[in-house]
Amino acid sequence: MFGKANKLTRKVTGLIKGLWWKILVGVWMSATIYCAFIVVGPAHGFSMNGEGAKIIFFHVPSAWLATLSYVVAAFYAIQYLIRQNIESDEKCATSMELGLVFGLCATVTGSIFSHNEWGKYWSFDPRQTSILVILLLFTAYLVLRNSITEPRKRAIISSVYALAALPPAMFLIWVVPRVVESLHQFANQAVIGDKLGGSYGPVLYFLALPAFLGLFIWMFQLRMQYYKLYLLNQKMKAEKKQCNLK
Amino acid sequence: MQSEMISLAIAPLIIWGTVFAYLLILDKKISAMLSSKKEDDL
Image 1 (tube, rainbow over the protein chains, first blue to last red):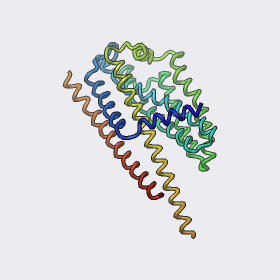
Image 2: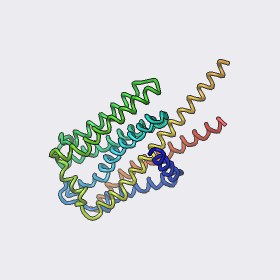
Image 3: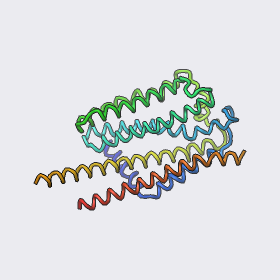
Image 4: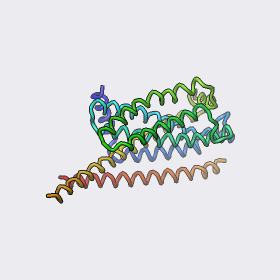
């Protein structure tokens, strides 16, 4: 299973080498902002004469990427536990860090939406409570990871935590908001049922989501390059120490 | 209304432009440092 998944990952990363796709991410995100403000019209049933719905273009992709981060982190956590490859553990940590960043973006944009639609920045809606718990799960991972100094021990414990955190996170994201009555129901049905109007669907699925996904991959790559640089530095320091001892 | 929306779109475009430029510069710098360190190793 991992062999096939790794081949796929290598193929994907092979395809996205170079500068061209990063420029494309820039253009795609700019097009998302342009379309969100200028091309797309107001949506029926939302505040500010329907303009309040436009935050969906930034809130929904952020929330989806926070979810994706969990899945990616769990994948690398399993890979680490099977192969004991320290790079897989670093990829798991990178994914959790990005999950926290995108989760925070989803929370901030969600609070603005909550203020516009329901009158309060925080309404203690089940969806809001669940994102708060999810943010705490991400933070707990990072705190736990940074509290252990021995690399192998840190990798094993944090990988097990990343795996253990996946089921409650998925439960909070997919199950809780659907079984408990929520203020989000109208907005959810509008997005999933594509009831927002003409160009909302295409802009969300073909511009905003790919732009945010590209940004996620770019940030992931940057974080891993930084890690490689850190390793090279450590290696050089160790070599210098050895030279001085001789 | 249209001109109002255009002026509203300028701020996020500027913010995104800044973030994008920062990411590009960071990307270039890290890549350059990695390749120079690898050359040193060789």
